[in-house]
Image (cartoon, rainbow, N blue to C red; front, side, top):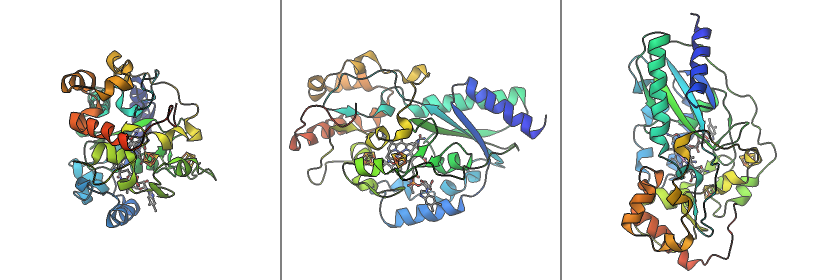
Amino acid sequence: MTLKEKSDLIKQQCHQLGFDLCGIVPAEELREEKKFLQWWLSQGYHGEMKYMERNLDKRTNPALLVPNARSIIIGLINYFPATKLKLKHYKISKYAWGQDYHFVVKKRLWALLKFINENIQTANGRAFSDSAPVLEQALAVRAGLGWIGKNSLLITKKGSYFFIGELIVDIELAYDTPFIKNFCGSCTACIQACPTQAIIKPKVVDARKCISYLTIEKRGDFDQPVNLHGRVFGCDICQDVCPWNKKAIPTKIPEFTPKKQLEDLTDEKLEKLTKQEFKQIFKKTPVERTGYKGLMRNIKAQQFYPLNGQQQDD
Ligand code: B12
Ligand code: SF4
Ligand code: SF4
């Protein structure tokens, strides 16, 4: 089999496993992106996410994560939900409605490694999806799967509601090339819509101002009243306004279908949620990351900023 034939077969299998887009890059150091990351950290934009400071070498050189790494297979999975939640005032971001993507994506990447070993050649590797220090968006850009939008997310021609996962392997393959063009053009919809001005300039997010960070990553009480604009876990505003998401199609991944209890959750019920109910509704979803205490903190924070009817998205 030629390298091209191997790569084609892998991509075909990626689609079979539920990935919508797949690309392959050599396992090389991400030099330019490293400089940008170092600058971003030096500005303190990562806030309390100390893990972003650690393992800088691994984060910018994925080859350090797997012995004799040669190639990285990057897979994108659409999570745009087919349904809507009953919640009106409070918003839980779409990526958290189904089962935790770390497991859903990695499960499929491990299956891909098994396929490679059974059908192509012996290969060792490791699968990741936001589960190790890897600059996942940079890899996806290098693989030609999309570009970095002004909201700092990876945008594809099918939108941005995609998780990124990668399989680092010790075999050589045929490689893809990055997009030359950034298709944001003169659009600035995300920058204008961000209610906290967290996108301080195109492609640069100050996490400390970002509602996603405040509702998920920030530990303990808020130092001062903070307007979360109805968001109690994550934030989708800068994606909802993106023209590339206007034609987002619903996910085909069964694990991303929200539980009935989550679909039926109302604002009133959420405000009075017990720890027991939290466990039933959010078990194995990304919301577990913030825990019961964190979610209730986010709900209580809204009392300083009364919500009047429908929020910005849907
Ligand atoms: C830390 C983190 C966050 C932080 C900081 C976000 C940020 N913009 O950095 C917080 C908590 C705020 C966050 C929020 C969200 N996140 Co997040 N997050 C991450 C994580 C763990 C690391 C991202 C990172 O490296 N940040 C560091 C800074 C420096 O990176 P950056 O600003 O994006 O810049 C990169 C590129 O844009 C590019 N770049 C940008 N400008 C320039 C300029 C030059 C000159 C160069 C060379 C390169 C360059 O290089 C940089 C390095 O890759 C990744 C998973 C991973 N391991 O990669 C997920 C990840 C980025 N998050 C993801 C998601 C879904 C979200 C949310 C949408 C969740 C939600 N609904 O609430 C929001 C979106 C907020 C936003 N607008 O960014 C997805 C994004 C998928 C996609 N389509 O892009 C990822 C990839 C997880 C995954 N595996 O799917 N996140
Ligand atoms: S996720 Fe929300 S708060 Fe963060 S940059 Fe996007 S719109 Fe702004
Ligand atoms: S909203 Fe506009 S500027 Fe922002 S990422 Fe989408 S296309 Fe780019």
